[in-house]
Length: 525
Image (cartoon, rainbow, N blue to C red):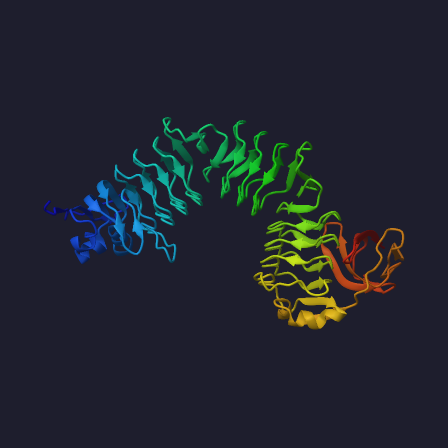
């Protein structure tokens, strides 16, 4: 068939006055779009209609060599297979069709796409980061959408799923922050939608809530699982009622739901995925139904049933917080972005801290790592810019050779690392610990901490007080009634502590060691 090229030389204008340059081209030999168009046309065409046969090479031309391309009509096209550096199947919008694979930069000029009526699949990351893409027409022939196919397409407001679709890949609509609804054709045997939310056919799996969903949302009572990232970036949701049949909450299911204030975990839940509630910056509490056999909450903090795993502290937690003495692990992301916390007491029962455990906790000024800790994950204290002292009791230092950036952005010039006397040399040689400019020895003797033996005297206090009944050394923190830390220092038995500059009132003295913690009320006269 003779190659037919029809060029429209008449320029049309949008309502904003931006010139549009339309072009219609018929391709008889796949892979020749780049030579069919002139250099000027490649550079200037905004509205492109193609008929005939194309392949992956032509998509590369549209992606890389047509900077103005905004409106694309491929409804009259057949997509041929192509075997080049990779194999590209026939009838598929190729992977990375409009996104550069090595930089993940999308074609930001692209606004609208009509796909061929013969297309059966969309490849992985085909439209990733096409942030201006606002309209996509999925043909009735399509059966699968690849993973991350429309990831970061923030301009999309609505997606219509045809009856033919049988498979949606992971993260296909991840960070589509403008999305208000999913619409599913009633004939589809695999998917359905209700109130704009995407489900499997029988409403048992909640797949994705559109990011622009607002206000309160109650999921259908039939839902048994919430898919990973299901509520990602639903920043305008203020409340979500979880079905009483839900057993599984997937990884990062509520990531970045900044408007949520409270989460209630029903008794049916048996599994909560990694980071399910991270970056919910408005969250004040977790409530767990008393009948739940796997999870519990204490003071609004989410734990496993027996309080041995601290899963998530609500990001809005303020002031001071003491981890229960039954806790053995602080899970990944547990305190991430808890910027209102001024002090967290870690008991001597804790042996491990997961990755990002205290990431971005800018309000922390001091951390005590008990001698029981044997494992610290990557990025645990990343971004803790307020830290001025770290008391590390482990002997020898926790091995950080296989983890990354544990203390990134901590001021290691001004933050003092206190270590056991016999371990100073080891800390000075250990990966990441050695980056601290000031590594100071402290005694390794562990005070006996119990209510019967420890006391403050005099109490009430006028200018100075002492701590009595201790053996060895402890870390003393003094807080006002609002939880603000006013004093942080290492103390020994009967050491003088001056508080003459403090105003009259009630205070809390917290003594911490690798083996335990005690809080004592102090009155300043």
